[in-house]
Length: 190
Image (cartoon, rainbow, N blue to C red; front, side, top):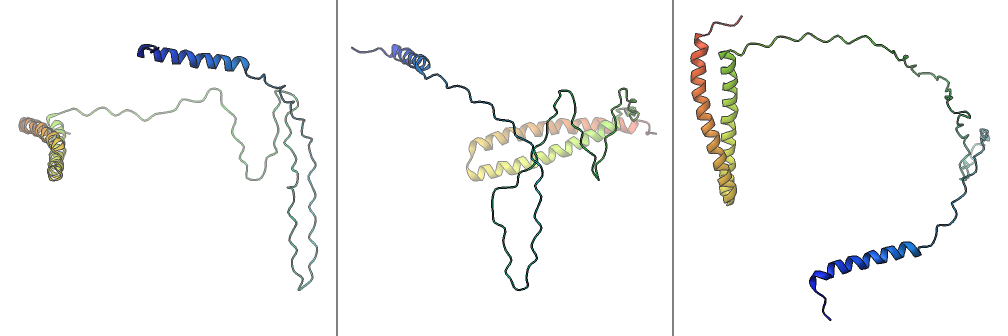
């Protein structure tokens, strides 16, 4: 009997599902839940022993390691809704009480936007042209490095990017020419 390939996956899934259901049904029931831990009694602080005076020339005695000294457990509030009061120690800073209606914050005045004159546009366009020229130079160096490594795909990608940047630079140079003519005929800024 040969099983078709179309039936193998559904049959395997049915077997896994059946095993999971049977496993859940026959799994042993959990034992009784553990009893809650007994409350820890509050211990009094342990007095420390004073060191014995040493005789000159006698070796120093090392304390015998043992269990750590018990520490007083932090008490929890007996009644819900009551806060634990902690005494203020030296160097503690008492926080200021919250104010229900604080005064509004005074912000700095908003300065009016400077007019976007031809001089302003010329300066911005010059800055963009400078950055784009620097970017083209960097891309040309990267292209030469890719060509030296024999990475033809990277060289072609960089060639395309350089070509696009050079076209944008050409349009920026034309725009710079127009803006410089407009800036010459514009009155000076105050």
